[in-house]
Amino acid sequence: MLTLGIDPGTASLGYGVVREHDDGSLECVAYDVIRTKPGKSMPQRLQQIYQELVSLVGRYQPDRAAVEELFFARNVSTALTVAQARGVVLLALQNADLPIAEYKPNAIKLSITGYGGADKTQMQEMVRILLALEQR
Image: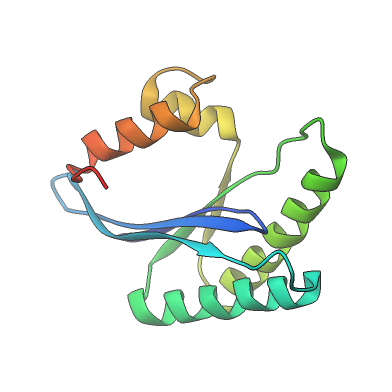
């Protein structure tokens, strides 16, 4: 089973492709960040995200997708741009007929680190350990 996981964002959108083997073990197939340029218009940035996601789905042919749900931050304008990126992500995945699971950020953190309030560094380290990745 191949899963495409996505952490939506407008400036940077993180993704990972993970294979779950029959014995339950996990293998990292790919991971990276889609970065858009701040000088571009919002429609151009959203188009780039859409096009790159369509390309990723075509390249890796995942069986399903997992997308982080939106959380309401203090900065409303950031939340709105992330919501726009998330909409584009959901559209690209739906157009590919992928089953989509959506998860709250604290649920993801809890399942990976055992602590729902884990920070980005703690998450990166645990994912690195769980998937036996070398440090970048």
